[in-house]
Length: 279
Image (cartoon, rainbow, N blue to C red; front, side, top):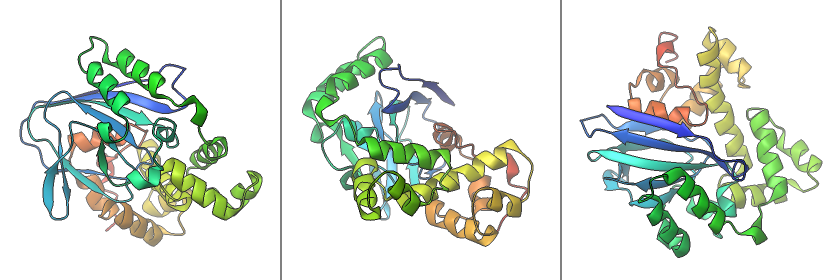
């Protein structure tokens, strides 16, 4: 059995943190879970046994406490036994405020927190011992926040506009509106968010597919057009690239853990739409 709950951050952190969440799993056998890119990096703190991730042909245990950097493709996870974890989901630009490393250097990796900040690591150790772990996590983050690096405000605005258009922004026009060259936008976005802006747009557009399917009854051609794809073939190619599977197979996968991961940022994994088969 899986229990999941999500907690919104206080106003002081909302600019940088999207949500806190706690997930518990009883340790009974469960199939590997496919997680797709969502444009967010996260801090994960484990009270119990960390999950394992599949890479390079083998399963590897995740660290006890770590930063999960941005991913640009599918990620397979499985529990190693009874699990309980606290997740701190950053806004796409948020992690850059707490860590000095360029975010693109941490992409696709599970970096132990002590390798990034020893002080934050010590503070987060106390979070897991606290009777109010969310309040303790907020205090640790506020203490770790580097006021001298209050974030790249222009990239924060770029993230806001891309998210608002669900990935439909014209990057050349966006860079002009923000008063920078396209090369500057790409370089600063990559360092702050951890993904190139074009890929971030693709991820936002792809995630919107499941929102559209979850909100109304429509066929795949209509869904593709509504989400900014040229046609359904374009949607299939993007889905294969980002998730490793076609839309029909992805939505037919029955994974309770994955369903909770998708829902963290409003990505509704619409299992009941599998009948609208698309390959």
